[in-house]
Image 1 (cartoon, rainbow, N blue to C red):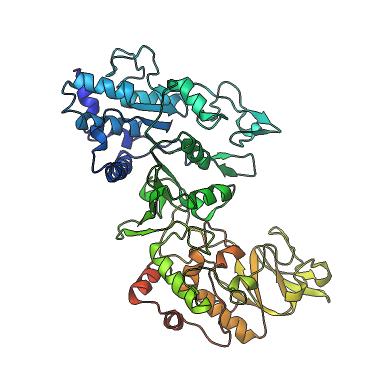
Image 2 (image 1 turned 180 degrees about the vertical axis):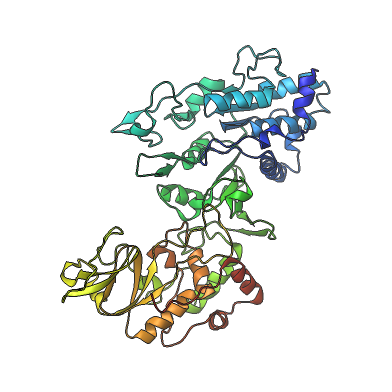
Length: 538
């Protein structure tokens, strides 16, 4: 066996793949240690499904990484198979050659990543090169394929990924980012064309690109990772393992159909959710965290949910991905029991997680642009006879009452204003945090631009102030967090928040007593939600 093979298959310190800079926040390299965690989870799932059998001792299992970047998954799979097959294939060179030619396959996402992956897996950028540890390939690609793929443009957009022609139709000198795995109407035929007609993969694993610029303003981008997941399922593997942004839990732009299909798919048997993406991808700014899931074709059932955050104890529970009455995935295991208690008190039913009519705080929350004014609207500095006060981005001004196109019924009522966007934390998800921006009471004779949502109306200043106190309670904001997929805090994030008696000055202690919240649940709430000061004056 060549020295190169012995080098590539043993542990390295340091590992060169842990030192490579990411291509971007959307095409990130998977750290080797994290790839190993994913493979450990896969091996456990395989063993549970095969009477304890060792996945890495099976010489017939085929693996595909359809979004190969550094080649870390294929390299780690090769290393594990080499160890696992040692007894039945004692000759190291023959064993490695079998693994590389018969068991591990990849599709590069760009020319440079394909070269990097071949270098990681074959010890050579050419699979048939002099230094390659594979001995049976007669072409440079081996089982790690890449050819330039073009977008299919129609009305300025790619029909497969939705990319903007203005952004990515840049000529032959630039990468197209038209990923071969999703730019086809028949993925089975494409795989047959790449690797042979009899190619059926037992395991598909990878870390797909997350989004592409859609040609919108600034850094506007549309998610595409869901396309890779859907395409992989069409190949009908036994197991599918992918790491993707966690924002799909609550839907989001272009993700509603994907979210529904995932939440109603009982073949998803485990999800490992990382609240902060930096715990997985150091230095990567990706709001909302990331997760990896294991999809098991032949063994549907409840899903094991594990939540990870820095050095906190891992939270684990086995439950359904979608609770009856909820339209989203409830991300926090502890939050499920808390929500059920709240719903039970308000509706008498803790199995159907929806508030009854008349009990929904969301009914008090305005839609976007509550009075018809855009964020960039600027009112008058000097008040005239028919003017009302407007809270706008950057301060206050005045606007003619007759120019207000909507929300007239709120103008002369007491109300609460609250920022549409929660306070930013840079590119990091940190806990505890505030969840919502600081609300303030709005007097009669005032309106706002869409910088703020309007909550109300209330019959008196006292009721508005008591509702303000309620919003600042930690339990209230935890219920918001359970339905909040991003920094945007629209009416929808208040779905799980019940109305209260506004003659009372609400505190967390009162809410904990009302809903029977335990000490352990209080500890969880306080670990997630930071205290918020009341702002009676703006």
